[in-house]
Amino acid sequence: MSILKGINVTRQFGNSKKNTVYALKSVNVTFEEGSFTAIMGTSGSGKSTLLNIISGLDTPTEGTLFFNDIKLNELNDNELTDLRNKYYGFIFQFFHLIPVMNVMDNVLLPNYFSKNNENDEILKERALQILKELNINHLSKSFPSELSGGQQQRVAIARALINNPDILLADEPTGSLDSNTSKLVMEQLKKLNIQKKQTVIIVTHDATVAAYADRVLLMHDGCVVEDELLIGIEGQEKKVRYLSNLLNDMGRK
Image (tube, rainbow, N blue to C red; front, side, top):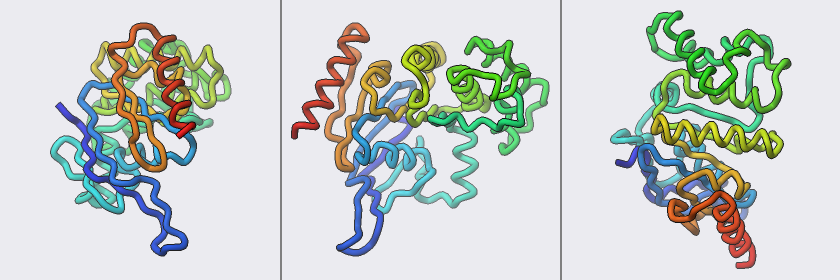
């Protein structure tokens, strides 16, 4: 069952012949519930714009976007904010943790802006369970400055999960990490997808990262030029080579 669907989604910047730029050009895309999708492409291909639009952080110039049966185009700013906080979890490249708050308070932060009336103790128990699943529950009272990059990103993942979102969105989640830490973070996201049936959508330029997904959308000049399923390719290294070749072939066109 599809959880997100975009129909003829276009994002235009500028309104004259001289300064008009199309970040997205009539993109049609569907994301299935419980799927793991990577959106790849070079800088300026439109991948981050697509992520912003499917998350409701930006609005299309033309086209329609559905979250389940909800038409996002018809929601006002307050309604979009409520929808994002209830159904979406966000992971960013630079963590965006609050330095004066400890790990527990950072994880609980999204709940302060929600209309959730859950008991504080229940929320803390949930946060500790999420931190335990990410192997960082022993750091609940630590501050961001005391953590490694990988630990901070796992805190960011826990924060994204605290309100039990339907969709987890990640924009270059390993962009600030070394290769070993990137592997650890991606394995955590894959585990969430498999064990909890979490719908995951990531934006990346890295074939090694995209290879953790089951499906890859390859973007170029604001269009989806390839829609590839990786399920039939066995082994992480073969997936990386396959995706790297796709990127190279696109670069030669």
